[in-house]
Image (tube, rainbow, N blue to C red; front, top):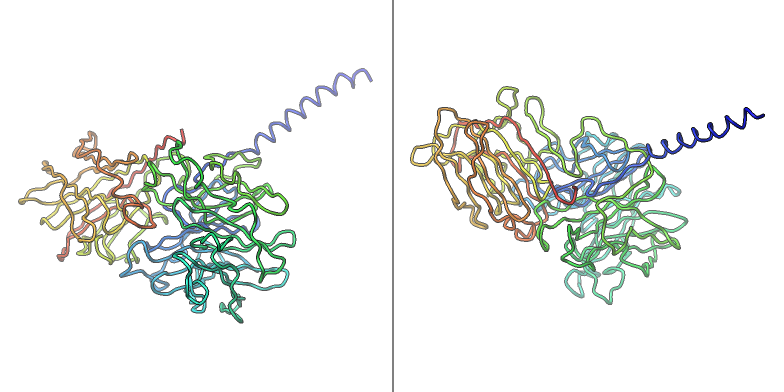
Length: 562
């Protein structure tokens, strides 16, 4: 008995250490944004222990990236929904048009995705057995008039419903931004609406206050209640998320007295490392059984100026009296949230949150995150280990609405660097190839190699909005026998810096402190974020020339992550 007394405390101590280590091993920290850069309008679905996340891409191609995660922290892009020109292309559309606000759902072994092609095809649905693809050709839903459709599956009744933002009652708005949420029953087997459309929400949670742009609606069921939640206030600084509930799927829906359940609009505008414009949310259960919310927000470097586009964030959800509140309601969204479950890293995935750096090589295949303008045409680029990515110079320019020789990667940080090695020998002043930082057709800076007075030069151009012309900011001669030159663009909040190297070692400043606000979403009046792009053009003339890019190196170094 005496011996047992000596052993027991030691055994308990060992057990305590083991349990504490086990608990410690199953904790991690969610880092916001979970997807940095231009990943707006997030929609998420949980299938078993897997999570799938999709986003708007507007007129870039491929459209609607699909990300996979096991822990809501580590995400890997596994495909794109619109990855074939036969499904859809966006030729003739401005970059800020195209695909608005996809919504993903799952039922009985099939993934469903609804979306709006804002100018041409309207609302449509596509399906897949594997979220990585292939996805079906789009099926149009012409009766669904509006934007932001989503499908709700009421499993107990084996019924589906499609709800969406639509016009004001009778198409007679009482004020600018007056919209409604409407719904049809949806035949999920034949992909068409059933019966009559019904209006669920008029204007927003309180019509007397003239709420604007009620949109991105979702329905979920919990504890016998149907919850209808949606964005309100527009996607800028007044953005918010509101919620209503009903005992019946068709309503009437009664708004929560504590609305909005998410917004940042009441906070001081001059706060450090501000996160603003939060809304467009969707709820999901985490690996720990607790509820979380995925939503969009932005990180401005000043006021409402940001070049990284609308990004994807996460926050925990708390419930009280059968109403949810996205923590911390109107308090500042945190850049980190600790969670008590195990982190599951994704094999061979590019980093997406915090500060990171990596180099894309072009010897085999293009990363699925790289974007073309409007459609995919594999005839004008090729990949090899020796040359990297070779682009044929096309007459099309990024200032037009076609498919120029452009391949871009999102700017994901306020403080970032993009670098490449260009191998190119121009034969005329119209032939230009290099690195571009681009917001849209009328807002970009182009660092390129070209000809001037029959000599090789390095040039920096600034676009002239609404003119399809560029302004030459600076030009330097290039000497040496090799056609290779290193190109580097760095963002530092409200400025861009442009450098070059002729020996692959030493970098020279071409121009610094170039205005970054010119490329902001606010200045451009657009919905998208900036891309670093590899771009080659013959400026309207036919050409047989090519330009090769050996690699694309990217690094982000934002102060809020340090």
